[in-house]
Length: 310
Image (cartoon, rainbow, N blue to C red; front, top):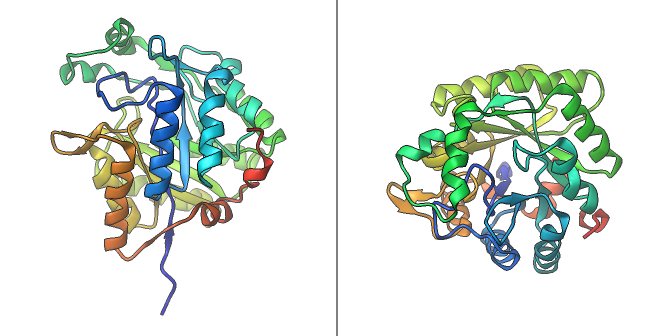
């Protein structure tokens, strides 16, 4: 009998600039973030994609001092691969966005593969309660927001991260981002296996229709052949349906409260671990095996947990 395919579950439990406190279950403090991440790993997540927030006002922060406490706890309690954001916030410089990854030298870091309109204002139609004053204005201001990720920005992040042995989760919000990645591959600035996180459902990027997912897959296959590992991120209510379709087509999957606040129609997820468990149930029903952290490291060509600075 052929060996079952290993599927990597990435979990993003901490929330970013595009998930203000519209759910009471979003972790904010270092203790809450650590507990959420550890629970997600125990539920089956092999990779943990992490942001930090200022506990005073809930704003996303790239201050390494806010990352340090939860990184230490996560490493002590799990063997999960830690993936630190270089996205941070569209309002930060590239140097600010890179501070945690440069300080802690993780196995994996996220990297947005192009500039884009980042429309969050449609959330104002669905949510009326916010914990902090800045959040409503932030969503409104996204009508006039460009998330800047120029070729120079990407080159800087690639060069500095690679010096530390950090590899990247290439976040591709549109077809053009795949071509940008192919450009860097051709120039020898990246090497396989590429870990491509296809992001669907953010206004300004590719849509969440299954045809969009299939178009992304066909294009990636044509550009990268067998040099990449593919993963699916569906925003909001698209999280579980697109992850299921993607997994059936050969992808890995990403869930977590950063990407979706929901567990089902009209039901807020009380934890990212609950979302991990839900997609794990789907994967097992499809006769796939959930990859362990060590199996994820092998598939993604990572340097190992003993080579990080936390």
